[in-house]
Length: 101
Image 1 (cartoon, rainbow, N blue to C red):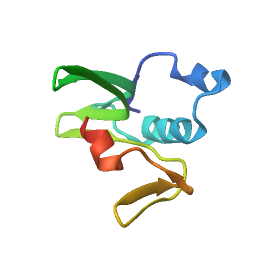
Image 2 (tube, one colour; image 1 turned 90 degrees about the vertical axis):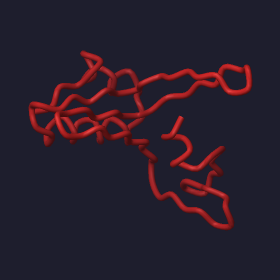
Image 3 (cartoon, rainbow, N blue to C red; image 1 turned 60 degrees about the vertical axis):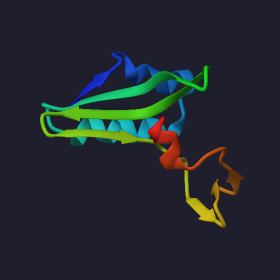
Image 4 (cartoon, rainbow, N blue to C red; image 1 turned 45 degrees about the vertical axis):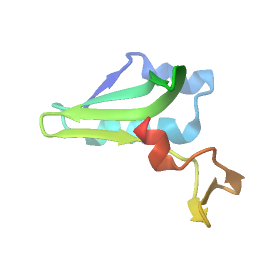
């Protein structure tokens, strides 16, 4: 079982956390090996042309031979003519750009 950070993640579901993220977190915890760590809800900040830009990454998985960034979407994701949508709702940026930070 992978190590999940922050601790106490099991209580997030009762607090109304996003169901798709919680389902993914439960699966990662159960199926990844002990030598891997899963960081959930990682916030980041960087400078862009003198302004602070911030965001959040749903999951970062780290292990001896892996570093993986995962952005969870609650349903289908599509792109038509450069416009990204999920469940019919327009995204502000592509999931790739979102994970890039």
